Length: 248
Picture 1: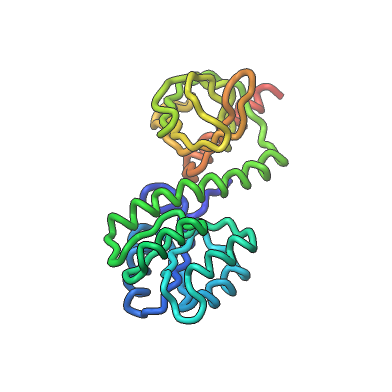
Picture 2: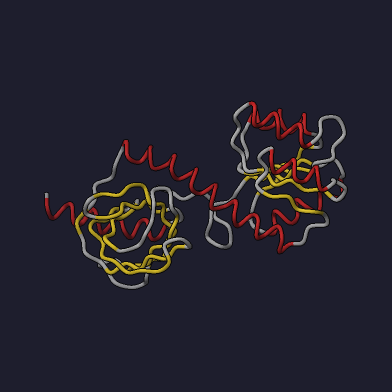
């Protein structure tokens, strides 16, 4: 699996649709999105944004609530009616408290008053990245499972780090270039993202990789790698292929 382009933090780049009619605000928001390692797409109205989404679905939306023509609130209502499950962050410098509350009730994941700071937007984008990662890699796992790469049995010390899981240590059960199975005491549910750290049998350097837990088996938790680098993918593939050749 060749990873898609990564941000400076080693997470996949997101396509962020900015729905904003003020050119100066568009430029500021686009620069802030780019600063955090993501790609900005711009729509000057809610109507244009809906047309853009119909052609190519973005990963997230920054939505001004007060727009000419269709309002941001109506945009959110239509997204819900069309069952478009997009993470939307509502923003505005003039929206009332009632409008901000209504935006959240209509499905926005957050409301941010203008002017936004780099830190504010960065925190929200970090949160959205985890949501996007879960969706992307759940879809990828379904494809991978249809053409599963052979795994080889190997026992390695693995450190498991996750917000919900805390930190624990375990032992790998098997390994492939796409993921590994770990027997540990970590409380991780399918769809959960953790960081796995381990040294492959070929020695250093350590591999530390975000991983999606795809299922619980009787002998351990099966993970697929999220942001494995190309060199580490090649490294693991060589090891697995050599083990498979020896057992053939």
